[in-house]
Length: 240
Image (spheres, rainbow, N blue to C red):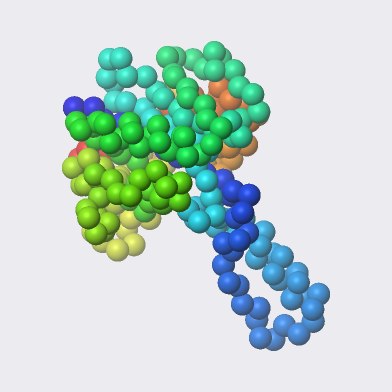
């Protein structure tokens, strides 16, 4: 049985502001300059903190998969050309493979085909159920490449619990509020550490991953792969 860890990178798309939240100006704001400043701040906060995690306003620019110590299975990265300013794939240490795409739709087709084809494949991520899978499916619906998928129930309410394992959800043990723990803290609690001795920045500074991908492609890819290896170890420890 194959076991994979998955991560995705997202960024606001060109029409993100069409989906900005309906922010209400405080009733005591009367000065137009003050109102304009308030709304501008909300726009900036939306683009930076909300849009990247909203399938209406963001697109997926990178998906990474790492298999659990399986012969012949190499880390695979699916990347939009717009996410990198040229890249030196040959500088990445190890046998990683890369697929580059011009359009998000083509990237999603490749990733979803891989996930659907693996009948004996289990997939894990941290916040898989509330971010990774919803983002993949909602962007796929937008691209009109699937009407339904085999790993959700007909009413769309549940994921296949055998195929998908969310470490954040598993840690909560069904207790509302207890799921909000970072992968970094969970790994430290379980005494699972990076082989390099340094915690991957993809875990500690996830918001900088795309900037680092453009400035230092090889180092960032290796960092993502290290995070996914830790993800697999954490998942295995708690029942994957």
